[in-house]
Image (cartoon, rainbow, N blue to C red):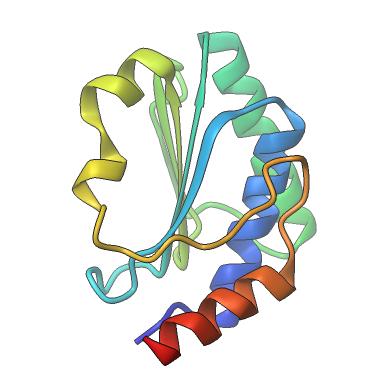
Length: 137
């Protein structure tokens, strides 16, 4: 079962917000087949704690504008790995060192990637295209 369109759209909102704050190595994953608690992961990294905080603030602001707020926030005090739980979408913003150490993308490597234009904007069309490609496989 693929992630819902709503979850994909929210993941793209979060990714755009992170990209606007110069997040590095943005990755959007459809984890709906592996987890029952959420549909999508957005994983982003930053080179310092201040940037992690800026990315987190931007994501929360854009997600709030899209009509949702996190039900849980973890790690904001330390600023090394912040988890924002928006129920259908979980956003991980990690310091680059934590990202390299924990390698979340390796743990979830079997999950489909949701297409995102890293130049600043993801598109609904690319998410739909990915969905269609996944259904054809």
